[in-house]
Structure formats: structure tokens, C-alpha cells
Image 1 (cartoon, rainbow, N blue to C red):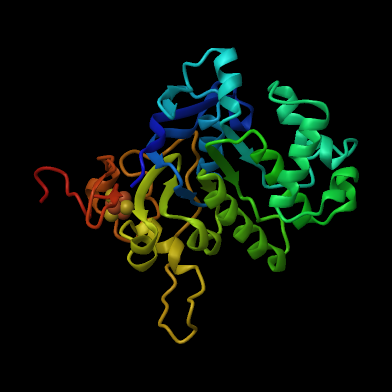
Image 2 (image 1 turned 120 degrees about the vertical axis):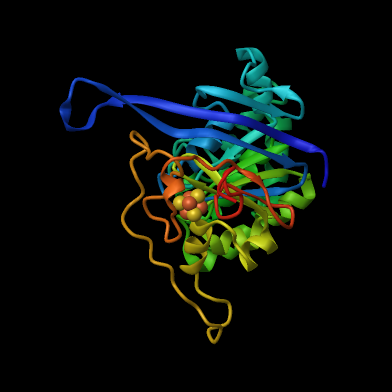
Length: 328
Ligand code: SF4
């Protein structure tokens, strides 16, 4: 594996909210609760899980668009979490976000050329004609004709707008791209074009990708490694091949059982999970998945399993794979 580009250690992001049911007490939402992983140069690391599991908050906390409650994030050795405002501003050139919604993320009053060139101007890297030429070059590398620069975003389809968003994210020559559901707002017919574009630009620019997606089809195409989140915690991290062929954690198995098989004649058993995920304001004791797990044992409601190494270069947080001492 290449050297680590992004190192995340014990990241937690908690929010205080008004208590549901109008009680005066405040509640703490543990959106992200002790997440650790690393991402190598040129690697695509995917965070997957049901909506509300904390994957988007993790991506935004890594970029410090949301201030984490605790933990450390390092980009190429520089501590992002402790960076002063000027240092953080400089770091933002190196880590960019591609949003889910290409409609909402582009200012409709600006031309595409100005939108794409804007980060260069904001960071003082170029201005005027030089910035405009660089914007046209990036648009071209993202599959758009130079005249696109003179139009406004409303003139383009969702797929073209996402190409514009990607060109804008790349213009400062970043090292890391956080892509949050980058194709989920697009027509299915367009999604594969944008996925291929992202794979292309990753090779061209040598980028690290933190891919956030609930769509395991997209993850299967793009990811090198997959991390599964449940209730703010990672429960399994595995290379793509191993994850899709033999997921270890019962939650990963349930997620994958809902994905259509590549070959319709392959046997398939859908694992139906009981109930909804618990509230992150009141997570259950022990394993956070024990209220829905088909393999839950008495120990699971008492002892929280930690993410520990398992077979084939993966890690898993489950007592089935690492029985607590005294229960082996
Ligand atoms: Fe299921 Fe227990 Fe493993 Fe949690 S620790 S996933 S409840 S078997």
C-alpha cells in the first residue's frame, strides 16, 4: 500500500440538541463515536451504512466543516484538528468536497468559468486570464467543451453539473477528495459516466478518495477498501474483494444481502433486520447492533466489541470473531 495520506484516530462528533418530547433536559447525539482509519495516496476508501449512521458527519468532521468533539485527523502528516485558521485555510486547498446535490452547490448567478476558477482566486493561486484558462483546462479534463465556461449552471443537466463540481474541486490540485453520495442525485443512466470520470481523475491526479455512499453498487465499482458504519462506529473494515465475497460482521452481511446479485441464478437469502436503528441520543449498552442482530448473545448487551484484526487484512467489531475473555 502507498504511504498514508489521511490518518483519522478516535474521531468523535457529538451534538447537543433539545430533548425530544419537549423536556427541558438536553440530549447528546453521538453522531460519530470513536472512528479510526487511514487512507493511502491514490486509494478509494468507502464509508457505507444506513442513512443516519454518521458517515456524512465523519466526512465533514475530517474536513473540519463540522468541529469534532475529540480525536485527531492528519492530512499528509499535518494535524487538521489542531490547525489554526490560516493553516486550515491553506489545508483546504488540499482537501475538497464533492457534494451530493450538483444543483444546490453551484451559485446560479455565476458563469461556469468563474465558478470553477473561484477557488484559485480565493486561495490567491491565480486570477484573471490565468485562472480562466486553468478553469477551461479542468472543464476539458472533466469531459466538457470550453464554451461551457461562458454559460450559467442552469443551462446544464445533472450529470454535466456534477462534472462542473468535480472540475471546481480539482482546480486547486488537491490530495484528498471527500465525495458524499456523488451520484445518488443523478439518473441511473448518467451515474456510470460520473463514476468513470471520478476513477479517471483519481488516476490522473493521484488523489485519495473518501467515498461516502449508501449505494453498494457504486462502492463495488470504486472502492479499494470498505468501512461499514453503524450508529456512529465502524463495525468492519475490509478490502473490497473480501468484503463483497465474505462479509464478517452480521450487519455487513445484512446490508449485502439486500444488494441484487450480479447473476440472477445465484442463490440469495435476504437477511431481514428487526426494527429501526436505535437513536444516537440513546445508544444501547454493549454492542450497538445487539438490538437487531440475528446472532446476538447475552454478552453482546453488556460488553462493547472493539474493532480488531481478523482474517485477510480486515478488522471487525463482533464477539463472534473475538469472544470476550472468559467466554472463549
Ligand atoms: Fe451481533 Fe453480538 Fe456480534 Fe454485536 S457482538 S454483531 S450483537 S454477535
